[in-house]
Length: 357
Ligand code: TTP
Ligand code: MG
Image 1 (spheres, rainbow, N blue to C red):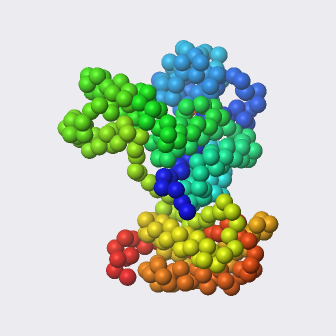
Image 2 (image 1 turned 30 degrees about the horizontal axis):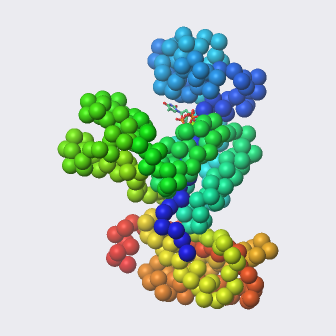
Image 3 (image 1 turned 180 degrees about the horizontal axis):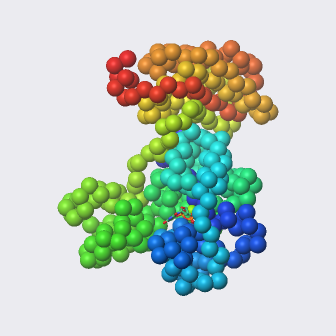
């Protein structure tokens, strides 16, 4: 029913702080805007620059003084973090409409694991486009998205066509993509590592792929293995959601509507397994379980009930509980388009508790 490779999105706002300032000061639109410490202060650095300012060579982390020399006509603005945090909240709210598997990396970017929502890559791409549109609608700001089957590639992809770009790296082109990727773009390659690689004659992914695992381990320690994997377009790291999440849901839209009871049962079996896996990964126990049904006519029904510890300890009793809730409200014989499970009212446990219970 579900494909074997994952669907990961990486969403990153374009020239984030500067775009917020341009949005709120329309007279600055289309102009070079630099957000950072004031140029008079010797220690000020640039947080970010609008795309117009980047044409002059202005970059994040550059001393503001240097930015001022490169682009004296720019509008210099001090950062207003509470405003950026507000926008950040709004975009994360949008992500959470789709999945709980959201891992924020900073105020303006996050990974989303949408594997459970779809069967084909094309749909994940459409979802990414929908999210970009929603962000624009709700915040008036643009973001860029990367879609791929692991975090490493999704993150690289989102940077490929900025601003307001969407890039997909499917499994069929991933090796070729990585082969051409400059070594500086691999995760964990800073200035020092880049120099080491250059000395070894490694300038891109293809060069990197020629190195043996043992050599990489010897030269780079633990990171050697991740370089070895990335060169092969592999990255097994998971999207780790914010632990403070207060709810967890899994849902699946079916390609053709379900009506046969065995199919419904099978779908819930997979959803229940995924739900338990995710709550275990996150060492979370919920007190409330809800079942969601979207019928073919798009009407939605939800039904919830309390759950006890046994739900998390035994997958058969978990499934039995799910099926009981479902049949309490299901309009028998009506075709179903989507099924979902939702846990809420979390109490945080730690891994030790999970095993000793
Ligand atoms: P980025 O996403 O790295 O940059 P950006 O959103 O400004 O531009 P891009 O279109 O290339 O994604 O960082 C997000 C915000 O984080 C950025 O707007 C300002 C802040 N930031 C700093 O304060 N200092 C830094 O060195 C960097 C890189 C970012
Ligand atoms: Mg950004």
